[in-house]
Amino acid sequence: MRIKLDIYPYDPNQGVKVEWGDDCIVQTSTGDDFTIAANRAALIELAKHLLTLAQEDTPPGSHIHYDEWFVQKANFPFILTKIA
Image (cartoon, rainbow, N blue to C red; front, side, top):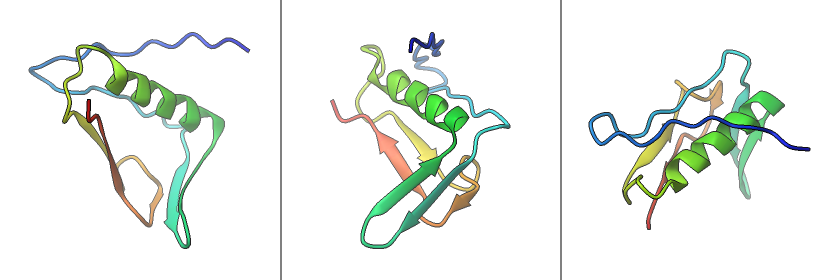
């Protein structure tokens, strides 16, 4: 399977720009493990978020917050941060 993805370039004035479609369903939970459960649309968007952070022009420290704004059931909000 091949999927073509468009991602936003890093903008130093705006930081990391990502989208989240209305059809995305994501839930987080904790127990013995931290779990992210998502439908297909959300998994594709998460892949785009990872690729956005992985761009060479995206500086370390850039991050995306995953809380109630992104995640329907954010029992455990988290932040994804680029370290190097």
